[in-house]
Length: 163
Image 1 (tube, rainbow, N blue to C red):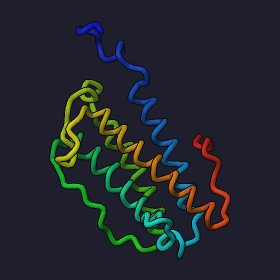
Image 2 (image 1 turned 90 degrees about the vertical axis):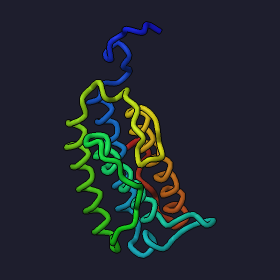
Image 3 (image 1 turned 180 degrees about the vertical axis):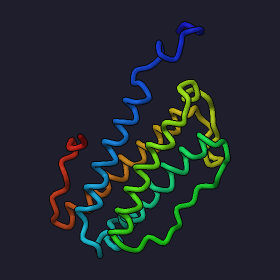
């Protein structure tokens, strides 16, 4: 590897393309949330896994707070406790977070993506790795949502229907 290569020479995706990909995943996850009947969203689980609303709350607790920490440098503690109790409140929180991701993303200078940050005091990795964790976490939990929906006899959105 050339040690003095510029960020652009190292990129596979631009930050803008990465954001577009993440937002596409968020659109699909929103469709999964919307597919659940309210009662099952908050109460249905399989094999001791958490209900999908709890998984979505976790996703909310990572995405915007993590980006905010990256932008401000103010370390926070991971916490997904909140007062979301209805499907509509969860969808509204999801939509608000999606907008906030755009706001914070635009404040991350390109060169910061390779800087280390100890996000939530737990994940000491480069910024792009911490953001990738947020996306991977969402995809992982969305997969659980697919299993739940199928177990409930509900056809989930097509996994490729992100755009």
